[in-house]
Length: 322
Image (cartoon, rainbow, N blue to C red; front, side, top):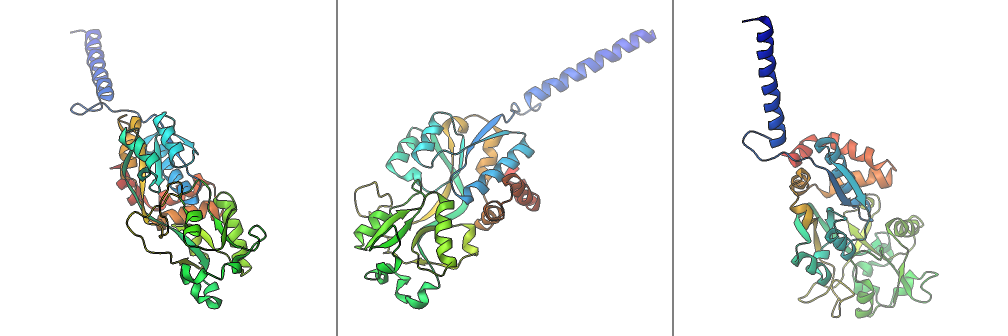
């Protein structure tokens, strides 16, 4: 046997070995299915601080741990992003406040262009709120009945002789105009704009120790900084509606919302490794508020805030990736 032949034989074995490795790389494993690259995942970021926190933490993990390319969109919640999912423009929404239960949402669920894949771990609450300091002067404001006849306490330049009710972002789940009318309250619904504009308005009044009644929600990182009280609205009853666009009775408190994760039908059947992560992604309101405060409160770049939380919560993140 010549040295040249031995080398050729070695090269032949090496060539076969490399070919086998390449075959395994393509097939994923000798016994499993094909390994699939993540590709691009489009996540819809909604217009509130908590959604930004969800979105950037998910984005960080998908990019750094699964080598995905993440694209963010900012389509209005509800029907607009349902349609965007149907059209293949959005893959994931990480925090839906029960928009799927409305008539508009149901048609997308029924045709499977939008799919609910579980809770993100948080329960949301919507209601009417006032600063706690108001209760010292007006203890009756603890309930909606105590507001009746005292609405002028909340007067503002926009509301004239009526009291002002400061509404939320017009794109949010709300029924406050209908509630005001059905409860017979002399309040004028005033909209400041998106979440930052509304916060700027009520927080300024709070700092001045003035009267303000407004639409608000939990979780929200500012709830740890401002002492707010939720006004008791009438108890829920069968058939009570939560969408003021629907005809019927709305005079009850908002329900608690299990905040759902949604994916498009296309993404649900894509086989993307990102889908498994999205299904397992859950955290607490404390987690969300921590990240939201870094971004909206301390003005940290969202990417840096997400990185800080992820590095401090490796055990939770690893559970999402199992």
